[in-house]
Length: 448
Image (tube, rainbow, N blue to C red; front, side, top):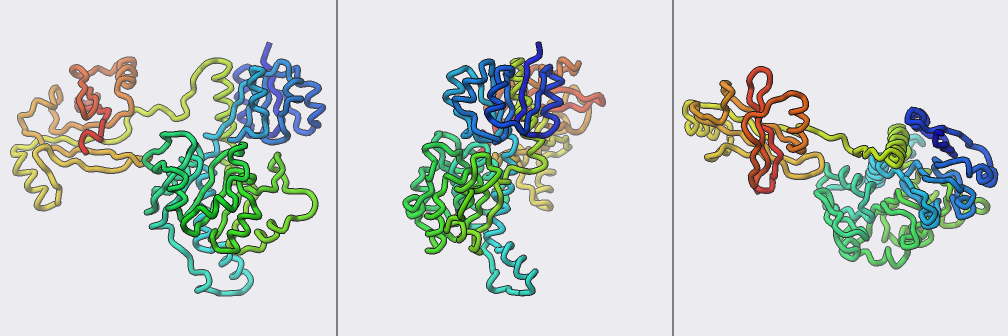
């Protein structure tokens, strides 16, 4: 019998299609009340939901055969997670699916605030041409503080690599820093930050975290970006800080007044603090859409499908495609007089060649140091054997042991035996035209 899955919110069609292809029976109900859904939940092993309603104890007690709850999004605060897990229900979320969208939205909000683009655009449409009052700020030279260094925070830090900024992160989990951000204490972040970007879930610990005391602990006036959850910020205290100048501007994709479904704001009279935000020129608002792009809609659905398959079939689907070659590790060529040739390159092209050649340093897509080697060998070298060519290329690889197994399975013959040194692992192959290729899994820090 096929496992039945109930879809409570519409999502990208690949979610339905791929689950069906994998042997699941999809049922859709996007309109029934929560009580009506509860009445039939015993028929289902899984539900797929965005934020339609809260999955509480009453709901979970009705779902007697439930094995998983898949939320097509990052946070799980609309689900009583502890109770679900006590009943053996697996919780699935997809923070990987919209982390890029959230990062781009956060950066867009920040640059808009710094350059007053929303104000300038509106004024020109109204017939005003004000240049001095719309003079902006540059991000270069600033310190950006990120609270919450998981999927979203890391993605935002990666976007900041193109700017000359210092990026600090704070997280309750130790050891999360990487090449894009330095992990520090909360107090150090508050002492140094010019910009604060929130990328945290809504939990009892983060509820109303950004209040008057938290804001006052910052040494400098700062800009605030919140693309996490609205209830992490006390709006009245935010408004007070905007009025005093302690907060220079705020980009808010989320609001304290949102319904749990994220589909609407409050009902009834509008709070005074929200009225101020609507009128403030140094506040930028969007309706909880930071992770709501065309691309993320598909990506979120794909992540959910993949994780459901892992749950049922035990097939671990990697989050990142396994790469073979990652770059050029070196270019080696023969010369009749290597020393004289290196001297020529030094004098005429500025190549700082030493006895080994020249190591060219660069950064990879994650901000890690990488190197490429340029080397001249004597024309009597045996290093290129069995190739008779005048050159040999070195290619950087992600995982040499794995690649060797793959190449052998594809009928590619290795030249000699693999070797391991302090600066990496090496193996050699020939291409169909007799060019020798050196495969290198590097340890770049050995050269630093």
